Length: 260
Ligand code: PLP
Image (cartoon, rainbow, N blue to C red; front, side, top):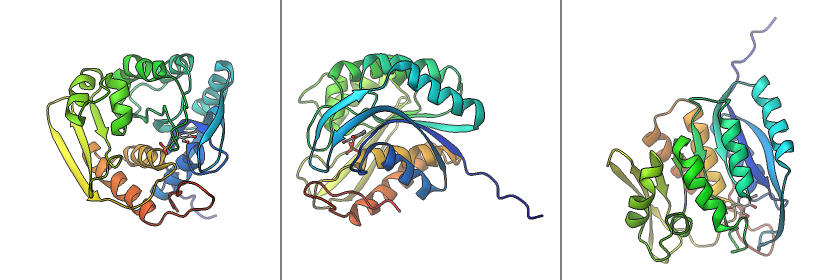
């Protein structure tokens, strides 16, 4: 008999489904496979969208989300949790309840409030609930600058100002750039101990669908593999940059990262 291969670390993903395949759970699964992890995808919401924009979404009943995740938690050794679109304040509370079953498991929170095309995937109240309820138990959150401004309630705030406002709620905050028109993209990691790391990369042309999902999932995968936080952030940013460099435009809208 052959010896079984050691299992890959399992990452529980609580995210929405994007039928274009560019963002949401499909992005999570692909990015995690590329890190050498196994994705366990629990659906939080369904969306109606293409690569241009989102036109509608429906958040699943809390009981359905609890049932999906509890079944998986009872069966698989969860090494990290990745949160994407939650869609409602109630879903934030539902995730908090689930996390009580996973003490010490690193939680990566991608505060999804808007699709790449600008359409809503949740009211700002969902962001405030994330900040108040889930940030305190998360290892790291990965907002882009527009999301960080919403979470910090600073519509014109700089990354530094937003971080100052948000760090009392969370241990690490990775605020990604790329939404302005500078030639370099500055991604900034702020830590509650006062340390701060800058990761600069070349700006790529184009608008991407699912880049935030790709980054947060790759990061959760790296943490699940046991990589230290700062190194995991660097690895996840490098991987995401390569997926954007190799992105394809399968439809009429944004480019989709090539994750595998
Ligand atoms: N999650 C879902 C289900 C989505 O549909 C989207 C965007 O459309 C996102 C997350 C966020 O995508 P991005 O990674 O482009 O921020």
